[in-house]
Image 1 (tube, one colour):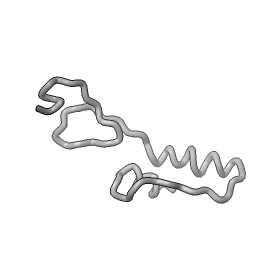
Image 2 (tube, one colour; image 1 turned 60 degrees about the horizontal axis):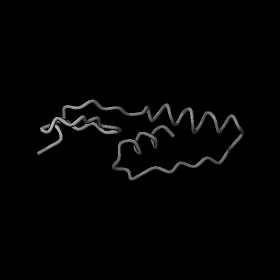
Image 3 (cartoon, one colour; image 1 turned 30 degrees about the vertical axis):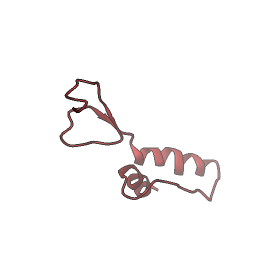
Length: 68
């Protein structure tokens, strides 16, 4: 028996799954990289800025890499 069959509250975080009737939320990865990575650190005169993300198969990792 699935969670929806049991009427358990369910919300998806950083992931949308077709066929699952539940609300989902996700951060704006491009904006996060702009504000946290490039903007703030560059203003503080840092010049060597690294980025560590998860495997390429994860959408948030792809979005962060694209924004960097």
